[in-house]
Length: 628
Ligand SMILES: [Zn+2]
Image (tube, rainbow, N blue to C red; front, side):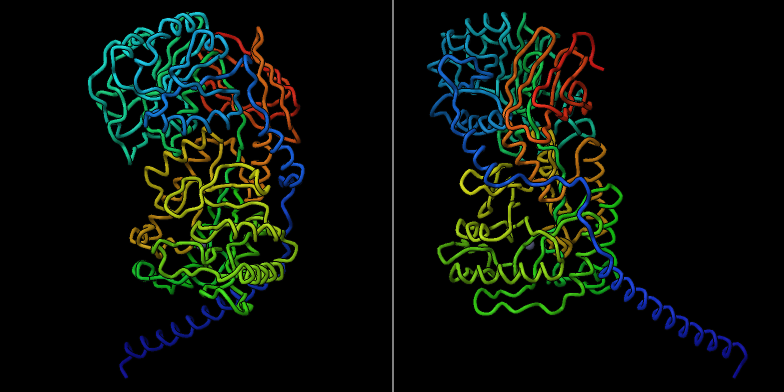
């Protein structure tokens, strides 16, 4: 055999032997790591925010709901609507929950009933009216009232009629085009909303929703369209002792509440409202058996099986990102993926994967909740899937659901002893009333479905349910694609509730509709981009697990705020203050925060402060003369 060839063969033998050894060592490392993962105990993170007692929080919730505005009482706000008008109805549906959740004392008044006397009973007036002819009698009194210190907000662009044009001088409008303009993207001209300056925000569902106007010099524009000839979207004008805010956005869906809340906060000298302060990241279907689905894009990009991809790539990335930014993950366990809805719910004996991932997540400060025994939503034969879910079945009876829940709770408690299972996420965000009642029989205290509902989805608000005491902690955004609509919704909620809730599924990477074709590298870079945007724009936000977020929602929902204006600022009396309360405070004009007692504070945007209350009375002093 020629020398050269022998050498090559020898080299090859060495190569193969080396590979075998390396492989053996790697296998041993994996076995060792799995054993280590199993034996190292996890502990509940110190300082974890606990849930308040269910009985007490439900009692206080019901008490707060029974309170109403007394006749003649000075109100924070009067919301004027035009009954029967579609746009006005939509604006009322959008603004009422905003005002209620800002814990403002407000009343709704039909446009025909607005009088000068009613103006004198409110600090702020919101006009959610399309045809200003119905207000022609009170236009002059409104002008006088603003001059004298009243604050007026136009909630959405109305029909440009003669009656509306008589308000132009008050609103700072020099001229208006006859047709509405399409705002394709928002541009923040100043540090107004948290996260606003990070980029321009494209509007995916844009339509000609904004008035095309030119403004007088004394208007301060906060948001405008990102266009060569920008359309002013939100502006403020000082008029005598009062202020005017025009919210020319015109998009009145739930996803945009934060913009209208922010516009409202520009009225008057200052505005203060309670917030949740929490960022939570949910991982649905995790830990769970290897997800089913098409691994085509994984084999396109990686020389790995789907199972290996999840262990070696996906989990590494997801886990490390959470570590890097210091946020805990909340995982929602699935025991197995059958479509079984009756009979004996057998124990899944293959637990090594679930225990490996679950323990690692718990040791990093995360939390495990329940997604289900399998992925069948908790619905009975009376529920109609409307042909949208071919593979889903209904449960024949409550008893079968009960049995399956018992199995998955026992399974999880066995696997992760000492973990209290408090968080439930409904599979595919579908849940029936009966399913919810059955969850009440378990240790579940909070249900995390979705904030922006569509079709069959179980839509929620951030609140304690008055009906059953369960805490609703909806997820606002999801997945890895994180397109324009999600970013706007995220920006909106960051400024409205000071909250970020995101959920991902391991199988997002397999699903074309959820972006699989982009490949994991691109999907992960978008997810990372969101995390960077969130913590970069808002370092003050707390990272919480699902049950901690529920605790934060309880405190936020129960908190009542009475505001009284003083010579030097504001005094707040907090009712139902337990151990923490968070408020956002906006100071308008060139007011500067001088001191706060009863709370510590931190600036989160120009003139916007996050207050962490330490007592039930908070005294805020501010001065005119430049925001710091
Ligand atoms: Zn799921």
